[in-house]
Length: 148
Image (cartoon, rainbow, N blue to C red):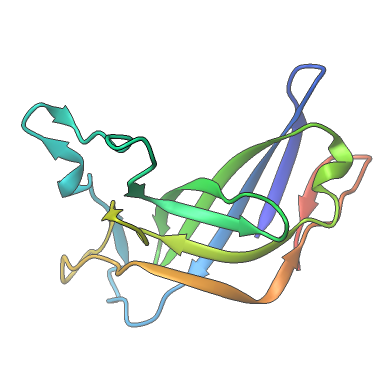
């Protein structure tokens, strides 16, 4: 996993997190990105905020002592990559941040876009704690970071 930090305006820093999730039992053809079937309804895109709260479950990254960040999910061979961008008031706010869990399509309306190329079966929803927290360490010189 890795993270890139750039300065937005004078009041915030944007951090983009990329976490690769290795999956099991994927065919040799790998995964493919498919437009989510349940995202379209007859009147246009599904209203994820229809009852005043977020109903759609895409991908998410969960942080220790911070709110989760929604993530874009895309296939990379037989793995999935979760990419999320968060806004932080100070550059140092990202230092020592821990990613403690990931999720994909885990919620009331699962929005699934990753499918096995050969079987055309979807990657099933999950919420999983990270076995060893991914701790972010800041390199103030380059502001390009990496996890362990």
